[in-house]
Image (cartoon, rainbow, N blue to C red; front, side, top):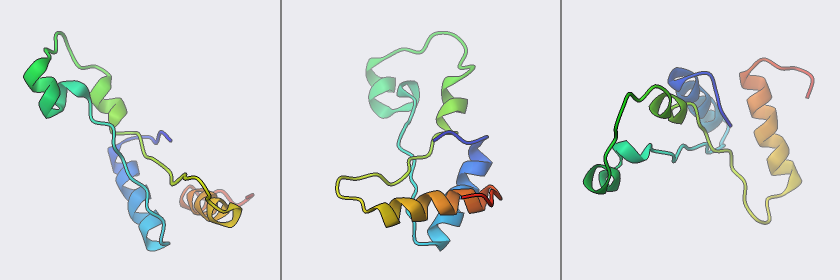
Length: 86
């Protein structure tokens, strides 16, 4: 899921944690990763990659996830954004 910015992502992750839901982020732009720095070369201006990577948050999704657990995640996200019609 993409959120507005890093601050919103941080707040959403903290909010979900208070409800027992683990949201994470994993994407690190290659040019900032150790292997990318060692083996690659970034040319030009980073207009989008880092900024966009800071907006990504992973929702829990796994084989065997029960519908009630998925509903809990969706409900918490709706609550965070103040959406009442879920």
